[in-house]
Image (tube, rainbow, N blue to C red):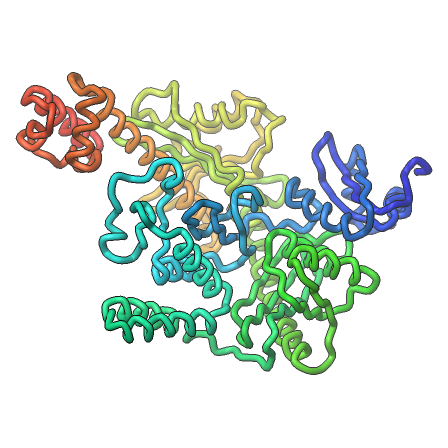
Length: 587
């Protein structure tokens, strides 16, 4: 420890080269001495982290503020196991293109790819708000790289008046970016100024006798007012502020952030994550605002931060670009907001704990039913999808602690199984998924979509890769029933337990069908453009130019195909016949 400097910096605990915890300290020597000097009587979570760590690295910084900023960057990059993890939540992304797009994404922010707002918790409400803003301000939603190559003509959205059509030559980038800024103000709750500006434009257009333009602004104003009509929570403050309350319970940190903009409570974020090793409130704030959350001028806290407050305030000031004040008010408008946040937190904790307890009961029931050695927290399901034996695909979906773990989803194009042979396809997916045998990340239970035949094929394939002890079950349908090995009759389960397995099956169906359809669509396009005898690049270009798309080509008659410049009746017949065969096969 004597070699570790006493200066500020970050430390990274790693296991086999993978970061599992990132922290910061005013004095690295003192902090690491505290960690490495802990005995077995210390905090269980800290003991577990230290027991799993094989190395620790340090990075020196000039001061504690720089250490905080570096800590946020490292947590965002590595997503360590023992830090507050906010990945998986939706963000709003504003692209850095000449004509920016606004859309919802769950990808972690990458500063080089554009600007981000969030994270948010209600993905449905977020998408509705973003869709309304895009429509009201007529922003593009297409993914064309307009700076590289624009489409030949504007799409239907421009023709119907819901997009400004920046793909057209002569579109003013400045006016478009102004619309983007107004849309962002609306999304983030700063609506009064936006409505005032739109009303000014409406009256200005009316004064110029441009009544059609005035009607457009009138409709936008009405739409925005309807969206804002549900905003009934008003507080006595003119300053934008966040009220934050958080609490650690049962190994989880629960946090609520009440966001106030222009005197209205515009949002309430409820976040639930694995409890951190450091100060819960400090790491919660760093986790949220460091992940891209909008930093207001004032942040009210339900509990004090102690000595960490000045450095955290300095870090948030750097993120915002101007001074940020942290306070723990006991009266006044700040206390009112803290009361709202605390009441929301108490309700959120009670609901979350009740759901968690209910889920634990469900998983305990499944443990005995499926013969697991421990409570099955990680579930995986395999599903096979194809169209009359073509484009056969297999997928695996994962549920971890009752939540979808989409980072563990996998897709497989079936290579060796014969067309329509679902049993062989299941065996192939299992062999490829668990090719590392017991060294692979294993689920607690593997579920197969199918009946006894599929179950037998799966059990045999698992045995073949050395996973004889992995519990496996099959979910058959019409009616829904669950089979396990060595039992002729289906399991009799509680309705709540049974519905969990059915949810797993429905998600696997969705994922598999989506992948199959994408491959089928790609194959259809490729067969039209590349595999038809007598259709070369010139004729392909002429067909697409005349008929618009592969769907338009498929719907055309022989005469319409022959009328395309450069086509002959023989070539038209070849296209027509090939598409009819493809349509019959996919039907």
